[in-house]
View 1 (cartoon, helix red, strand yellow):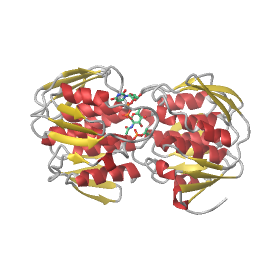
View 2: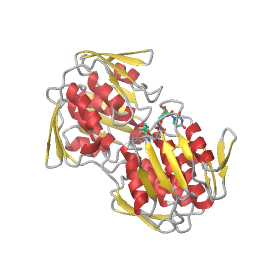
View 3: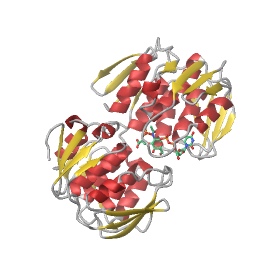
Length: 423
Ligand SMILES: CC(=O)N[C@H]1[C@@H](OP(=O)(O)OP(=O)(O)OC[C@H]2O[C@@H](n3ccc(=O)[nH]c3=O)[C@H](O)[C@@H]2O)O[C@H](CO)[C@@H](O)[C@@H]1O
Ligand SMILES: C=C(OP(=O)(O)O)C(=O)O
């Protein structure tokens, strides 16, 4: 571990000020995969400059794309992106690598990849991804280290997802847009990122319709033109900063919140005692009265409270006197931050998949280690609320999804330094 993998946080001060939210990671990644479906130059405007986007860019280059940036606009020239192999080194670092299979099959009828990586928060199988591709006519062979797929022209089909999966829904959409005939996907995930992917693809000439809740119909087309669209602000980053304000009892203004996508988050924040106003499209957050423990916070599929904000919410609840409980319902191993919060002085016990938090004990700065992306953000939030200085190690995980967390939180009056400082 070297110093560049650490963030040093000096806490104990309420956040205060105005912040602008970066583009969404989980919207940008599948849209980058969509660019593969056209032989031209696609543009993603307002794309976050984060490690996962850079890695997806690297994979697309490996497949033959030419890519460049102008500020936060990412250009992907996929004219020659006819590669069919994603090296395991790349796929193993990111969950979203797997959705390139559908796009590669649609384009080149052949694809192979190592198994996807990403945050280690549960088993995260790929059975639904395989199922949707097989249903559309792909032949798939798995050998334990690699997934190899091939097909003639994919053929539209009716597919039912037995479980709500964001990635498998994206996989089905990416594979079906160039398939022959009509595909009906039932039991789809409804996270906003699915909608953003569909509208980008429809801008490329795809024919995707939402018929009822959880049902997506796709009429396959012969050809897609290059895409050009804006990446929305990141609802999870906005939620992270909202919760950081709550944990420090601060007051912040979020300039460009994705308001329509934040109801589940705002409801939980309000139950904690947090207050907010919406004015001119801005979210004015007053976390001064955050002080109510939560009887039971459960993570849910959209529009419920997102699993990606479960650890950041835990970091707030440890600052609130009384007993709170959290049940993580999406990923079975997403409590890895709890022992580190306990090291800072929190009292959290995990029993039968429920985190029981006795909050209100003072948090004290120490050295902690992020195990994954949002857990890392949660440690930063706890560090901002703690007395003294905390060294958060493993910030490479945080950089997967947060473009400038140190600058953002420092602009809000926190003190975060990357690369420097020793305790
Ligand atoms: C890059 C991206 O967009 N990541 C998000 C995406 O991840 P991701 O798309 O990987 O998450 P899924 O929605 O697929 O996972 C939901 C649940 O389904 C299970 N599952 C998934 C696929 C499969 O083939 N079989 C299966 O059993 C998973 O283990 C999990 O328990 O949605 C998650 C749930 O909102 C978010 O936490 C992640 O931030
Ligand atoms: C779990 C996450 O990402 P991924 O699915 O890419 O691992 C996340 O963004 O919180």
